[in-house]
Amino acid sequence: MIAWLKRLPFFGRPASYPCVTPPLLGDAPAEQRYAALADYWALAESKFYTPAHDEDDIAALESRYGIRLPPEFRAYLSIAAPRRQFMDQVTISWWAVGDIKSLAEECAKWTPGWGDAVESDAHRYLVFADYMIWCWAWAICCVEGPDYGRIALIRGDPPDAFVADDMGAFIALALRDDPQIH
Image (cartoon, rainbow, N blue to C red; front, side, top):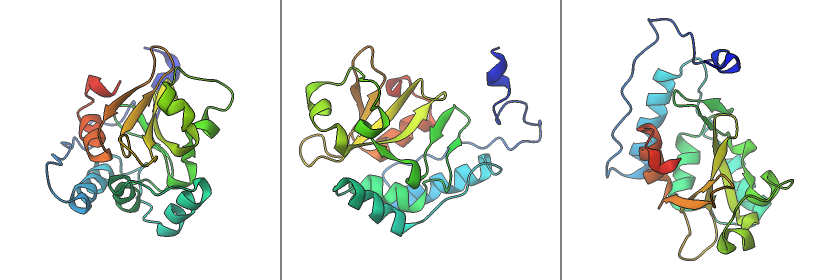
């Protein structure tokens, strides 16, 4: 095993560390699904996760990028987003509201393999999570139109692609560590 990976907080957890089954989010209203997610993270990641619930930060995010957040994403941010970035058991780092940046800002020093639609609106795609300390990341489309609310995988090569139609679908896939999101 890679030495640096052994130093991550989730390795070497004691046998008494809670083994919690991820919630089945199903078709419940967004508020119930994200409350279940927050409860799961709070139980499974008790040392690393605290929900933020900060409407002022969410409004500031919208204002900073001149966007209107998709309702599913807004519900996630207001109910389950972490107070500070944390890495879950499948090595996804979930970003705090204050850490979320536009794709153009986050990737200012390099140009991933964005498609034409993503590239032209990179300032209105918000990066909200990454995998294994930025091997790749995920961004949500905040551009009104057919891709509004869809989640894009940002990895550069092969070209980036949409992996979920909304935040609820993405989180359901992430909780199962579904290969579709990678």
